[in-house]
Amino acid sequence: MSKQTTVDTSIQDTLNKKAKRKQLITSLLPYCGLVFIIIFFCITCGSKFMDGQNVENLVNQCFTSVIVVAGACFIYATGAMDMSVGAILGMCCFSAAVTLRAGAPWFVALLVAMLTGAVLELITALIFQYLKVPVFIVTMCMMYALQGVLITLVQKEYTIDFRATSWLNDASVRAVALVIVLGITYYLFHQTKLGPKLKAIGANRETAIQGGINVVLVTCIGFCILGACCGIGGFFTLTRMGYTTASAGAGIMLNVMIGMVLGGNPLTGGSRFKLINAIIGALIVTILTNGLTLMGLIPALLETFKGVLYLIIVFSTYDKSKGVLVS
Image (cartoon, rainbow, N blue to C red; front, side, top):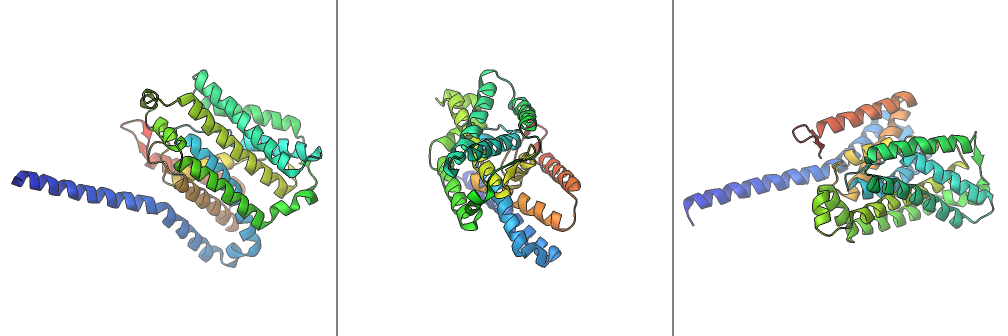
């Protein structure tokens, strides 16, 4: 082996080690961020943060956010996004409430909510795929359309018999439901061919088509999974509150988007997209919202803070030379 070849090999090994070290640090950042904000709010908020009532509120808030974010991974991995998840979750709440008030058992109401979300997301996916309308425009139009429907259908509050479903609010029941949902989504995303196909679409749509991937079908499946997760989140939101309003699901869309970037996932999707990172990001944004509320930040300023936070993260990860969002 020549001296030049030895030098080149040494340089390449050094670069590989630096790349692996950078990748390791990047993968650990979301976990470090989660631990940091928990310690921060334990110190700044004192006993209020670890109070039993606040922990219960935190669990309820994380439950819905984590489930919706887990479903959202199936479209964000393709480089798409959904502005209408909050409105769809609200529609799922309403459909479940109507079903329960009609006297149907809870599991039927849950299935109706999941079906409602899946059908609405499927409509979005079909418009996006076949009419070639940008997904941002489609989902924004869907958001406003569904908000109008909700305002029309739900004038004030649409209540259910809270006593009949109170057992669903038990911590153990929610824990089991969360484990089941995360287990299924993790398996679909990382242990089946669906996840790699979604990532391939995010990496390069044309290459994915040439590689034999049915982009339309795979994308529709991803949107339907998100809709089903919105249905689950909407159903448990309804059973916890005992009623639904026209504003049910408000704020979840921004939480999903922030959760994605705080978890270190690229908004363009692709091979580096990981479901666990998105879940960590969802936990961070939920705990952040809860902690800032305990510190006395009013709701209006809280939404402003989250909007500015999202803008800062996106700006810091924006590759201006390529004109795309990257992690």
